[in-house]
Amino acid sequence: MKTALLAFLSVSLLALSAHASRPKELERIAEMQESLAKGGMAGLLAKAHGEGWPAPHMPSRWHVENVATAEQRPVDTAARALGATLLAQLEQIAPRMQQLPAGDELFALTTHLLDLTDWCWKTEGYGNLLLAQRTIDLATVGIARLAYDLTFPIKKCVPLAARLEQPWLSVAKRVRILNKEAGAELFPPDLNDQETLTRMWGTGWFLHEEKRKPDLRKTLQLPEGRLPQMRETSHMRNRLEFFEEIESAFRPKPATLLAMWDVKSHDSIARDAGVYNHWNIPRAKALVAYRQLFGTYPEQIVWTAEQIQANEKSMAEHAKLGVRVSRLESDPEVLRRMGFEQALRNLPKPENVSATEWQDRLKAAGGAWEGYSLVQKGQFLDADSLKVKLHRQH
Image (cartoon, rainbow, N blue to C red; front, side, top):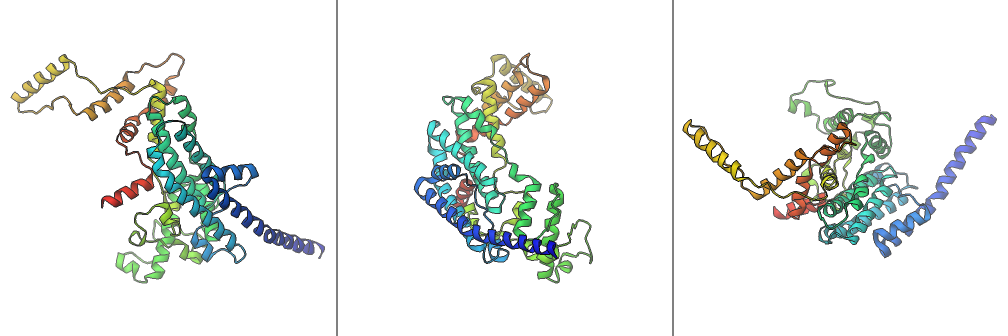
C-alpha cells in the first residue's frame, strides 16, 4: 500500500513538474524569438549560450496535430515558429555566402553557421535535424570559398573543415527521432542499420497504401501475405498514418526547407536523411586538404613540344591502320583538371609520414578539382539555392 502510494505521488509530482515547466519553456522560446529578431543568428546564439539554453525540441507539424498533448501543443507550436523564423533569416544569409569576399566577415558568418548547427542538432528533434542540415550546408559554401581564395589563410579553414561532421545522421539518432515523432516505438530502439530502416519504412508505407487502396496488390500483381522484403514491427499497424508520404506533385516548388517546413517529410529522414547536399561537404574538405598539401592550386597542364610531336606521329601511324587516335587535349578546363590530378600523383611523400597516412591525405584531396571548378564558376551553391536556380530555369 505504501509503495503504491509513493509511486502515485512520484508520478503526480512529475506531471505537475512537467506542467509547471511549460510556461517557462514558452517564456524561453519567446526570448529566443526576440533575440533572433533583434540580433539575428549571432544574437540568438549569444543569448542561448549566455543563458545555457539548449535548442527547443522542434517537432513536425504532423506531430503537433496528431500526437502532441493539448498541454504540450503551445510549446511545440512556439518552437516550430522559432524554427520558421530562423529559416527565413537563413534565406537572407544564403546569397551573402555567395557575395561576400573571402575575408573576416565571411569567416565569421561561416563560424556562426557551424555554431548554430551544433546548437540545433544537440537537441534531438525532427525540425532540429532539418535545421542542422540547412545550416551546415550553408557553412560548407563559406568554407569552400575561403579555401579557394589563396589570399585567405588556409590555417583558418582547417578547423572549420574539421567541423563538417554530421553525427545527427546516424541511424540510431534518426530512429529515436522517428519514434518520438510517431508517439510509439515503431522502430527497434537498438536499430543501427540503414538498409533495415529503409525496409521497415517501406513496409509501413506499403501497408498504409494497401489500407488506402484495397486493390493495390492486384494492381501491382503481388501475392497475398507477407512479402520477402517486408520488415514489419509490432506497433506498425497501429500508426500506419505515420507512413504517409506526400507525393512530389503536391509538394511546394521549389521544395526549399522553408517551403517544406509544414510538409510531412519523415520518409526522407528514414530513407536517407536526405535533405541536403551530401556531396558538397567532401568537396569543401577536399579543397582545404589540397591547399594544406600544396599551399596553392596548380596551373593547367602544358604539353611539351616532344609530347605534341609524339602525339602527331602516333596519330599518323595509326591512321594508316585505320585506327583513330585522339589529339592531345586542348580544352583549358580539362587541362586544369589534369593539372590537379598530376600534381597529386607527383607529390613525394614526406619521410615523417606513414604510407597509410599519406594515402589518406591524397585521397582526402582527390575531389578538390570539382569543388575548385564550382567555386570558380560561382556554382558552389547550397541545396536550397540550387533548387531555386533550377526552378527558375524551368
